[in-house]
Amino acid sequence: MFLAYLLLAPAVALVLGLQAFPLAWQVRLSLTNFSPMARAGAAFVGFRNYLEFLSDPGFWLAAANTAGYISITGVLKLAVGIAIALILCRPFPGRPLVYLAAFLPWAYPAGVGIIAWYWYMTPPLHTSYGPVMIALRLFFDAHVGDGAWGFISLILFNIWRGGSFTAIFLLAALNGIPQELFDYAVLEVRNGWRNFWMVIVPLLRPFMALAAFPSLTSAVGDLGNVWAMTGGRVVYPIIWTQAIHLALIGGQWGKAFALALLPLPVLLAILAVCFRLVEPLEEAPA
Image (cartoon, rainbow, N blue to C red; front, side, top):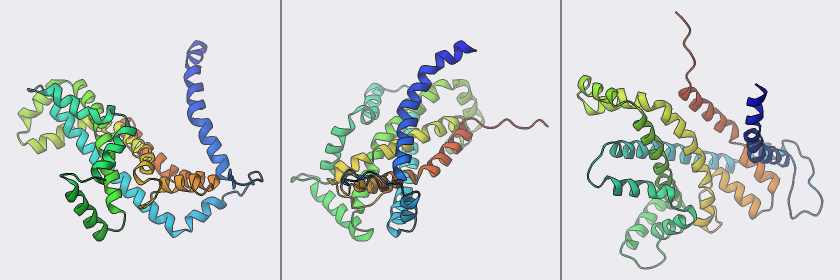
């Protein structure tokens, strides 16, 4: 038993060093008015930073945008990933090329991809597709709200990258499920949609739940790309882009940490649901 804990110790130290310590440091500073522009040291303010946001209408607008962003990207990345995985799980002519094309967005460096994506969605030069993109931007900004096209472009970029990762995950899961189960399902259920909903989805449910949380965290991680896409302007506010703006532009690091931590209970609840789907509780004996 001692040897097992000894072998586990380096991994525990790595997790605590890379995850627990930065999180604890962020929680501590969120309870202060820390700012690198202030000459005086950080003063303890308790939960004042959190309470100020909870009474701010701008925060609730950003929270609604954040919920919409996470929900839309999560569902669509899962749908794209399932579609790609089902297409690639069976051999067909040209499959290696489709395989490379499907997984290239995930393997391609995000820093370079965001520049290409920005030039595509908002072409700075005269291009063949430029008038179409300009018309779409004007349409969505006029009917949905100023900055809506930038918000949609962020969603599409995240689906483009995250759908590829989800597909890799689910394709590995499909390859690990015995083919006899799918062959038997074809004999029992003739309708393709019923076969998908009643056989494939239940078999993939634990893997879909396992892929959902990394997909969510990648959606949050890609918000750093908002900074590159908007040149530092937060036109369509999301909680974490507001936190970046507070820290880098306003210098209010204590408030920025508090804002970034506010969605943490919701994320933990989502993680608990995903874990429950991956590891269902044992049924009570009859």
